[in-house]
Length: 170
Image 1 (cartoon, rainbow, N blue to C red):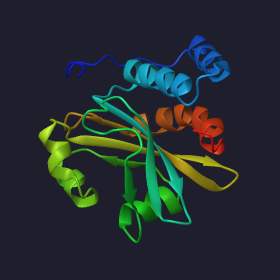
Image 2: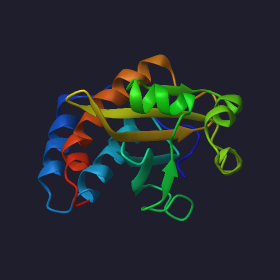
Image 3: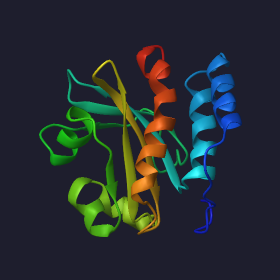
């Protein structure tokens, strides 16, 4: 896991060039997910980075990328029906920012595992296209890490996941 003192920095124009190049790579979703994992670590910071695809017919999300596959493997599924988190993120398409253990406990069934990894804050960013939530980009870090400004940066970065989440081959 990265150190607690993960750097923060503003996004630069060459960052978007890096992401555009990553989208061109034939290995998807790995290419863009790895590029977003790295750039979000540099700009926002995280200890865990995952990408989930949302299946609205089943009310579940499936992990298509994880920076900690031993703890959160690709392919893992979670039911997300009739919860305040699902309403906020998947249906209303708003970012969820949790800043402490109480926030983690209030929305995640696997809160003990999350907290046991030293993760005490979360930024769940919906990936939205044409008024539909396609999935989420999720960043977790130590308690108190995420700030309101991180929500906008996260939404901007998450938009680069749209083509991958629309492509049902990944």
